[in-house]
Length: 527
Image (cartoon, rainbow, N blue to C red):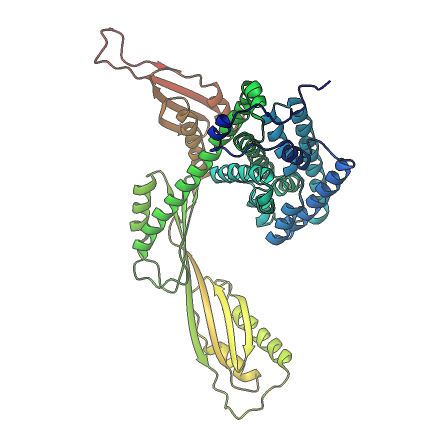
């Protein structure tokens, strides 16, 4: 007796008219082709399939962790090609399309076990091979956005189509590279071993995005390409559509935070571009050693410039940045002043040439260090780089004073060396041209309280009028149409304060007094 879980043979009762009417989909697969697809997706598993799947999964995780730890994109791509996880994932989609729900749950269980094993194995390997700062190949998989979802949908559709169409099955390796499943799993284990929960959650989001997008796209393609027999499709369409819709709901739920992440990234990029335009206009023709850098950190905007010239008036830039991004922003300008000098020693050129390069370098190094020390403690002289090559001594040094004279240095070199050397020195002087006095701890805390209050208010339909902190008491004044529950706000702000500090939230009700006849005061204050 055949159960409802088994796919029936190709419907031979269809007339010519119906076959022609559905040619815009795809030719309907015959029974042999359908059996081939089901075998390739491990819906009907051959002998020893589980053993081979486990071995290939383990090897792909090992390769992925090695590639991620070595920051090697080529090795990570190799892990993508080795990974067999795409097979049961597309198997889930095919079973949903065929309404073989018991088999889809079995494929889902295989994916769940492979996922858990991959994370555990990558965690163990990371404890042995990953040390220090996480490589770029790891961090690049911890912040997915809406583009990752679009890629996963397209790659899932391509994978299902290439499985159905045997003549284009050579495209499957490209699909495996386009939507990687094992590298995010390896990233989860590496991030967990490093104790970085933020990176781990980001990698989990990327993996779940890929997984559900592949299933949703696969279900659609398997139906459209004629993988499901027409009679079975008519009988099971409602049940399959309901399950596919549940997968679609998950995909939409995932798409919302991904779209938010994409929007935030675009906003950050636009904000930095706008700030760099203001910095470039402020610098004007200033000789810059490198491109200026702008970073945003909460209430602080930091501008870093490295130049041979002295800084222009900072007030213009501070006013421009505060006008563009808010008067409450704290603007800091870090100006690295670089000076360069060139001189030549005066020892006659007829002296003996020293042939021992290591001994010459050691002597020059000693003389330079003594000269920097003799500049005095107020100079804080430091040797950053030194080379002796082809009769030229190149010295990179820094300190807190202006460019010192090289006469004393060349005199010492003349006195102790046996040949003429040209001396080239680059001197770096660091200056903090704004914000000479850093904010007090209370000012920093007040800024954090204000930011927390405004972030909380945005999701409650109210507006923050003022926030204040006198060292022992926080007062937050809100305005809106209805009073919100401020319990979470008080708790969030209290976490920033000492246990003895107090938090008071005042609310002002905003009413439309042009359309009401009430004699009650238009505003009320609640403590």
